[in-house]
Image (cartoon, rainbow, N blue to C red; front, side, top):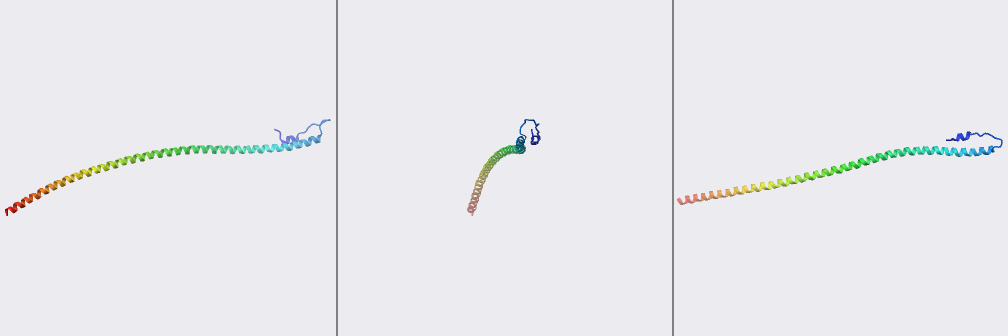
Length: 149
């Protein structure tokens, strides 16, 4: 690619019936000036493009990191939900087993209390019968005693 210096330093051979040298110099000065502007603008645009490409790469890396983080966060949340469900199921199962044990213990207590009640009722009946028998025997003894007197 030609540089502005290449254009500025270009010399043309002179000929006998050539072009007007002053007109060529003015035109070449204008070409050099415009070319310098374009050349500098091109360099600036390349620098900007390079800078933008670097930032784009940086943003691409950030995007990849964010996507990776999002995937990890999503998997973690799914794991947490799954673990919470398992724990809830376990708690419900333990509560159900505890409920059954409490009911079973309560039923057994009722059976034991009823058995004890029946036993006490029998003992009371036996006691009443013995006491009645004893009292009757004592009354008979008193009657006998008073009959003898």
